[in-house]
View 1 (cartoon, rainbow, N blue to C red):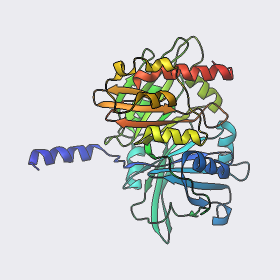
View 2: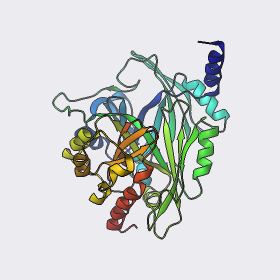
View 3: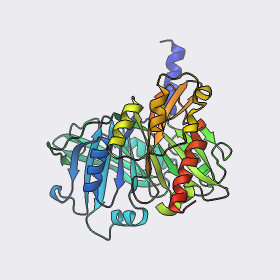
View 4: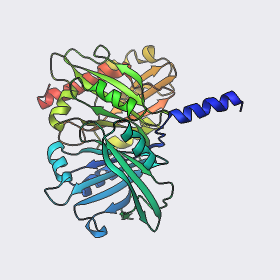
Length: 377
């Protein structure tokens, strides 16, 4: 390595005051964590991992941890009324409370973000058990969503201190091929996208890598705007949506109304075989949005050569888009609870770094058809 290259590398390292290793876990506050855990295991192919509740000394909640490859979900429910978890579920329904990010130093992460204007949620806290220690800290972001910083280099247990191993050898559904969190999308209120872009830039050192305005993301009836925020190494990406003026209510407005505030709209889950994964998910009862068959008439003209056969994509409703670096395949679930709020995206990247701009119109028209059925368009 030359001296010039070494200096450049050092400069980049110094500039990234919040080096992130990726998403550690996503924690959902839900009405019934035992049943939610069963759903994510049976429908999405997660495996049982860990549990915390009254039997482990926790008196106000029960938490079930499930994992699939590098994806970890925590499902937490209140077991009494009159506490913040119960209030969160009452207000929002089932939804994401914590987006936990893996770091080497949770103390430094908290210090660097709070001194730049981040509102502290949790000062650095050291948790220990026989398997070692985990350091946890956190800051608030949009709505009632929180970013936790998780330092677990010195921990060898199944999840973290306070949890015990959990599972049933007679119920261990096979994986569906989901690998890790590709990105998480947040919905914020009118004129709030740019303030939150500024938050991610100034407080967390992210950069705005893509922007979509209401001309990019619009249909005959509704529109929204979006900006994609990414950390330095690209391991963590947070697109942020806000409503835009349209003839009728946009999907973001519907979300804000039924979630009763800002929050995580969807979590994108990566796979290396979207056709196999989606077939498996569908066979387990996961419901997806469907675009008209006409979407596929000129698909190859729009995106160029793809490795996959067109017929399976058409049969499953998988969308395809391309950019200068390759293409991606994606499909969006219907909401996974009765409120039309949180849903999931299944995504396979074949080089593309983008987010499916070419699919926006077809996708949002499909969402609007669902909204119209609910009477919310």
